[in-house]
Image (cartoon, rainbow, N blue to C red; front, side):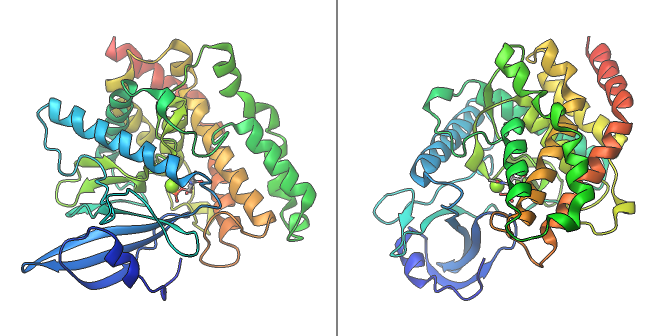
Length: 371
Ligand code: GN1
Ligand code: MG
């Protein structure tokens, strides 16, 4: 992320309407570099998102952008068929003046642009159960729309993205390598993760057995990747489509709860403020299952509560592994940022474990109610 990059050449490269007035850094997301481009066009203000794709993480940005193009066109088409408003239903790619959906700069950086979706908000924490219900419905809708998408045409943008067994191996290697010489200071956190090693296979084992199917999923469903109407909080669309690829519905559900049902922000320093809100879990699950209860397999339904623990543990071990590796993956805003993030995730894991029976009761009663 940088405040002093010269964007003028890029702004001329993309097919933006009007004349540029300003560009500002958008400090959201831990991976890509994002700017808001403000133009004036015949007296109207128009805004765009300009993004530098992090190609040390996304090694095939061309495949990634082809995924985004295919998926956004599909979402727009289905929304239109349903007779709904399409202008804010998904991301809209702005091509370059040559008609390409990405642009490589002289340094090999890969850039893309979208329309800025106006009158929208995204939240780092949810403020009420109504919002959670809406977000759950939105995930159900999203997965249903993508159920008709040809999965075999999608590139796998990051291999083994939610393969928690392989994530555990990466974590273990980061502990052993101890590149930044930090392992001895986070022994408690390392031990916490190590005692949960066997749990890491809980979804991938079922995928291998065939009881949990692969579907086209979002894979990064944290609440701030959902745009809502700034007046009504109605869901407009999912953004950050870089990891849309075959995965488990449980990854999306678990990751949503990890983030949105937490009582605190992902990097809260005071762990006494961090727990999983059971009523938020319930509201989200109600919304999600209102759309998906008939489509999911019995094993998917059975593993919904465990998926929340697993995805939270996975995220915690990724943050901790990055802290141990010297902060090379996630963008950080201060030296211990990844450690603070890891600690909130592990605190959530412990809290969810203590609420696991209650989470199962919640799911059972929703399913019974839906019939
Ligand atoms: C990253 O791109 P962003 O900030 O929405 C990460 C997710 C993590 C998330 C944790 C490609 O998401 O997997 O869950 O941070 N994305 C990638 O906040 O690694
Ligand atoms: Mg992302």
